[in-house]
Image (cartoon, rainbow, N blue to C red; front, side, top):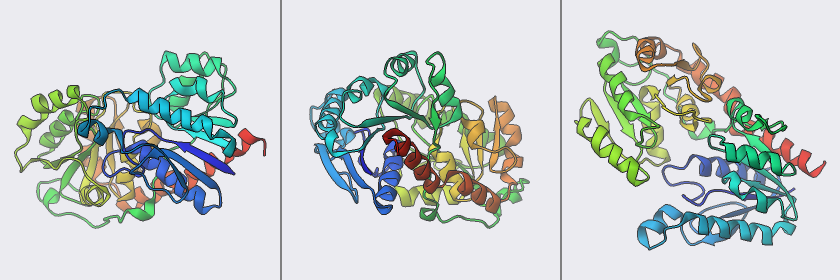
Length: 359
């Protein structure tokens, strides 16, 4: 098939550091090419693909905005959709990974369109889903798909995000430092947090969980907007001491792997209804169990007692840390790979493409 992929423009494909959706699009596109499909990526000039790249803007928008007077993201995203519609006749399927507010334009394209929704589904999204039934929809968790289906009369397919498990080398041995502090565990001697420095991602409670356990924590990620920068300066930065609380900033793949594989557990104390949470399966790919808050899709991703634990409140999470640390890391990785390999993700999307084109 001839497949057009339309990622967000915030970071390059693949991303240099943070960029969960862009990483998913990269894995999808590369495997589709390997399977013999003709792939066109409508992205930024600093993106890489084994298919064909149609450049929308010179650089990813975060860099572009930092280096120029560029300010309004939507102008560039509109340009991306215009390029897609211009070239839609060259594709059998257009697969959008941008927000649903561009769905009305996709409905005009000379190719079948599919939108994967990577965010929390809003009233506006449901209105669009109801009013443009000819545009395909996919969710990244059953929780999120149910939100999109509510009141729309639509059945939304679910394709879980995938991870390239071959790109992560797990650490499966036991640790010493945490055991000496009276906590049985496998893996590393510290806890890890990886995500945006924001209220929603909640690094503050990750620090509190580590403190309650008497374990060091390493934080990675960055603030991405003024509100998040203010949160980081006020709530997180004063707690960073370089010893029990370390901050290493944004990380590339090699740095992310080292952070996750050497951690005793990933702490994921979100304060919003996460539609998926790619970092959870990346930790599992390293053999690292996950301790998460039970919001959004978490209960679908983390199998309690197998790949980690989850709880509704932070105090409950603190109580579950010893059990999380005691999980077998080989089982964590094996079970996660069986469920969340990027090969399974591509299988799922190939099936949806075939349904869309009627083959």
